[in-house]
Image (tube, rainbow over the protein chains, first blue to last red):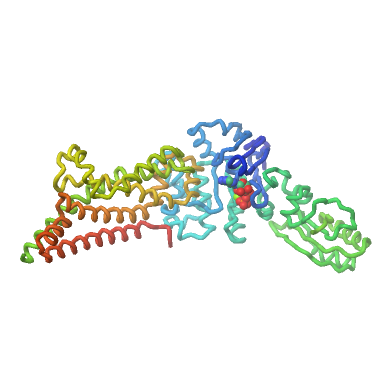
Length: 338
Length: 220
Ligand SMILES: Nc1ncnc2c1ncn2[C@@H]1O[C@H](COP(=O)(O)OP(=O)(O)OP(=O)(O)O)[C@@H](O)[C@H]1O
Ligand SMILES: [Mg+2]
């Protein structure tokens, strides 16, 4: 999918709010590359600096230090006019949608065309085209107050696409939506990425969002990047403490001695596993296994997610269970819970 | 005095009152609206941050707002004579009314524009809008219902000032109420003129309320 040319290159990015005693370092030296055509997820706990990072990318925030290149152009050296031109190539959608409440759906989507001086007839045509992409042609003359959250975000997406951007930045775009609506918005983003070839940067604190649509992921914690890689790789072999915390595992030392481990984590990374894993393993080993937590999704016939199992008391039983699970082709890891 | 004569008096007073109120309100908005916009965009965190200019404007506006209208009227006599060609009569009142109303209008506009969700302004910026586009296509339309509501308050306040102006040279319903009620003890005329003023205020406020409601799309 990715052509492997960089779309966004960030080097040594720092952002400090305030000064002196009350200074808050939101970002302390972040370097990151987003490739063209990727759906790149940036995940972290609240206050990690995700919003600050994404807002620096279109200069809604001005970094204290560092460089940001978009398609090779240094955006920190841009004058206001160049900046406005850049912002038409890098669109953004927000958690709170930020639609113009006094404009209809069509009026909102027409806004970016208006400010670029697109002639009315052409703009009208384009508005309908865009509303077609997001599946909202039936709501042309409705006002945002008359729409559901999911519909509002669709309008915001149509509006963001109006300027034919190369990049779409999404700051917690699904965090105000219910799970079903979240799914449909994520599918729409994926569709846009594939059909229009737009590079998408997704900010979230939910691992499920990353797993569903991203191919690359960056984990950010305390203003620093702690882990980065292909989603499958990072998800199956999580190295950073922050990453493990985001997956619901608390383990600072993933390679503890066996006697200190008290849970088994099994990961479904998208390989088709036909057999019902747990019941097969229970039958095979004769062990009683209890599930501590499970978060598994079935997508396009593949299973994604993880399960935490309580381990048997004895070392032999534990080994037997792990072996049986590995034999079934699932990724198994022993973890220490707190 | 006969009902007929009272009616004629009140009619003329009504026309004179409108003649003072409408032009001074329009002029006050001509200056007050841009000033209100300027106050909002130049404040700290505004889209054209200029803290010094913002503070200077604030001081001038507060000064003008703190001078009572009747005193301002007297203070402005020499300037009014130059600007309006006369410092007596109905027409001359328009200038001091304007001077005392525009700072009030600026504050009302500022309040309305400050209510606009900062997220919308941020979204507009993220789409590459110029400052002018943000003001013209986002801030003013989004604040429209509130601006109209503010305009109704401004016009009724100015209307009340015209009544005070009756004590200092302007004609209109206020003057009629004062001359006939206070000086000639013709209370019938006084009540008629006062009722006419009350009705005018009610009508302006009602029009304002209706326009506010029909222009507001922020709720279902
Ligand atoms: N305008 C600001 N002024 C001062 N401090 C700020 C400002 N914006 C963010 N911060 C601080 O910077 C840090 C990072 O904030 P940021 O909003 O980027 O976090 P986040 O990862 O987006 O969190 P969340 O998931 O809660 O949205 C936080 O400590 C926050 O308090
Ligand atoms: Mg945030």
